[in-house]
Figure 1: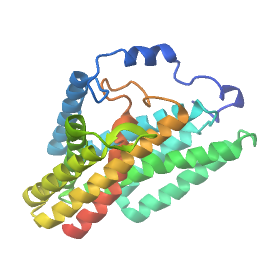
Figure 2: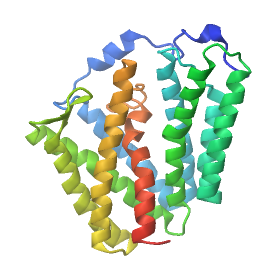
Figure 3: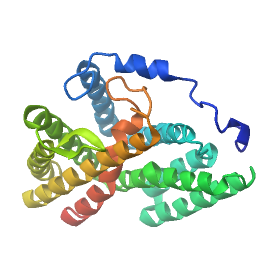
Figure 4: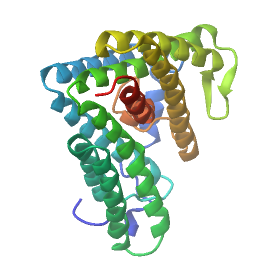
Length: 298
């Protein structure tokens, strides 16, 4: 892409995929919770192995993974918003995403905030250069994408920066994954009372209780074993992560329902799109960063 998007592109499908691909995806073998479970497990294990290897070999490799994942997430959100005629300027959104994450790692929280502001200005100028028709709507969409997921993902870079950053990231991801696992298991086995049926019919209060239990136990163990912190701090972390992860899931579900789509894309078999996996992580990242900075100061 070499310049601002033209208005004639507004109603074109940016992905080239149609309803047929989504229908085929829905035809795959699914579990009671609506996933292709073998594919989901395989992809999850593969991604987990990639993250662990990157953190063990050199933690800057994890920064590359975060940048790549969030970049794909930006593209997915831009593609989804395009379906309701909101054309997010892609170039400044991607450049801003990379800048926020890298600057957070190198320069800390102040650099993250500054690059968010510069990204928003860049989105505004880029869009105005393409004319004023629907400009406000497109700029608001661009700012939304700049914040979610890019700015929120910058807190993961803040966690990664200290000397023990690799272990902080492991705790952050582990407890977030435990929220998903606990919620899934308890929801399938005991789910009876829907939490938000109009937003996510399969999410239940029993599943949320499972998320809290697994996160509290896992958080307490992870903080003690990996960060040499107090067990109670890990328990508090786990409880807060369970809440933030659930809010992240519901936020993503709300966005998808509002846009009339099932998944952000089909890049990850059994999971949907990258944003379908980042939804919890990006909401948990600032919570985990703040709590870990309090419980286990760097």
